[in-house]
Image (cartoon, rainbow, N blue to C red):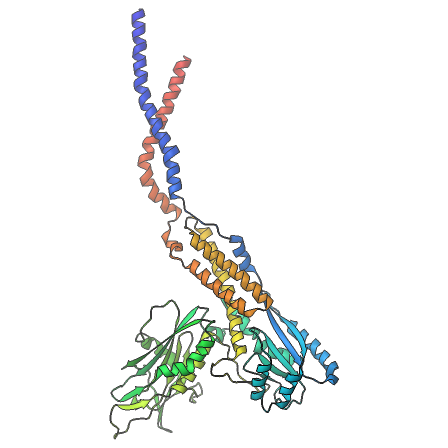
Length: 548
């Protein structure tokens, strides 16, 4: 009996050894899969996301834009007018404080001064407003963003009919009328309406009435491609020649040079033969000319645009076409809504460019064909320059009976117009950058598996810092530094937002992830889970046997 009992114990021991080995192997596989495989898979597939200043971005998007305008008002009045001057000061300051916005606040700081002996001599000795403007700008230097207004008595010799005069620089002359001077500052030197439009267009606000200036000009961009094209539909009849290189050098380069810090400009030109405008002008028997309404001209842009060619550039292109009409349609005039010829004989296509119809002498029967004609590039570039001003956002302002304006010099833009352009673009850049960063942060919060690289985070931090600097400089009245900070902000925010690695389509939503991982892990997970269940049952049975 003892031998049989000993033999039974040996058989049970062998049976336990045979069962124990597979169970331990299953436990080892489960241990490796759960405690080694899963962590390795988790860390190898974890999305790297650099930290971004989400709260600062949110604060910048909701922040108010404070724009400080430094003014210097110089009194050239006699000492007997001190009482009237004090009334004028009170009236002017009250007028400048009214009409502030909620998200965009325009403030003025006024430095009151008295005309120096040298300045008084300039006012007395000048024989015209042109001479006065030239002389006074040599006496007083005015930095970017500042405006100087000289207050003169009511019967000043050069302002007999008008109330004010704005020169080529940042200096104006006005009679002592508080409301008129305030209007001069708000609507001319600062142009508050243009600043408001720039801000609300940037943040996406919609007004009830469409604004022609904002619809006409391009949005903020670091550069422009300027393309000048000569269209000659019948070169076998007319041989049109133009010295575009000399014209650009003489008439366009001074303007582009003055705006060199505003944006980068690239200029190219071409001549297109057998290319015309798809128009059907009507004959006018009174002067044997041909007329085409300006309302029909926008329809000719699309057919000719395909023939202009394209240049590889990230900057928008502005096209300027000089069209030589077909000989049978000479002379060709563009007419307005009243049927009268337009003085410039040109039309503007918003955010695209402009077209100038250039009439040349009609070939006669005795002329040798092709007839060579020289293009008047001076007149052409004057028209194109006026169109370019509108397309890049220079506010259109005209002189009136009450306000006289000095014409620009050869640069094509006055200093105070340049300040209006910079100030509007600064506000637009800051608002656009903040809106771009807010959209980016919302996208990254919504899709949590988008990789945020360190270089993208650096661009975001640079944009945030530049926006903060721009707001600080703008609130201090330092327009020059504020504009350059806004340029850095818009460049960094756009670079981060349009980075190829942040495209939403590159990343799978969670439901698609499950569709990918289930076929991969299910065949492996089921055997491992089954083995673990068997091990658990075996361990329970073994524990029960020991208790028995």
